[in-house]
Amino acid sequence: MKSKTGFYYTSGLRIIWILVFVLVFFTNKLELHKIINSFHSPFLDAFAPIATNVGDGLFLILISLLFLFIEIRIAILMFVSFLISSGLVQFLKHIIYENVNRPMFFFQNDLSFHKIEGFTYHFYNSFPSGHATSCFVLFTILAYYWSSKIWLQISLLVCAIIFAFTRVYLSQHFVEDILAGSVIGSFTANYTWLFLNPRLSKLNGSILNRIKKKN
Image (cartoon, rainbow, N blue to C red; front, top):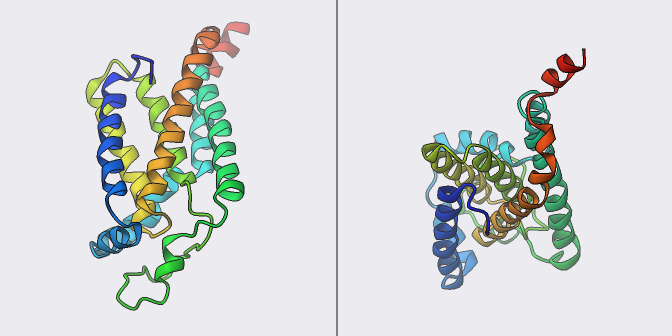
């Protein structure tokens, strides 16, 4: 990423990418997923199905709408980043990698594999993770918005990783799927910010403030 905005967020993310890429490159994805699946708990079984909704496209749209009342510019940047990244993800999922299956496709008949009772599992269109993509669109834009606060940048990076990783915990995706999603989401947000942010300088402030000024 070329922007100095969100330096600590982007620097930390690069380090995570390198570490995860090495892990993925040198391990078998089924074996790695089986190992991750062995680390489970009642708390995580309850937490993950709820927390994973942070990566849902609807959640990101709702946050974008909320930002209309905080900073119109950020709302637009979020929404545009979401549209571009989600379009790319759907193209990859359904056209390029349409035959890549999700973890549960391989482990559905494995009695030793941990499954969450009552959770609805999907079996197809695994790569890349759309939820991870949306997570990193959301938290990258927020990290750039609050780039003056180092502790907040780091916190946002941790949140992005945790919420994206719920997809692996829930066996909705392999590690490589969320790695790809994080790359797509963060790069889309970064370059949307670089291209659009200077052009949206007149849209600082909330929609309510603009209405008041007109009146």
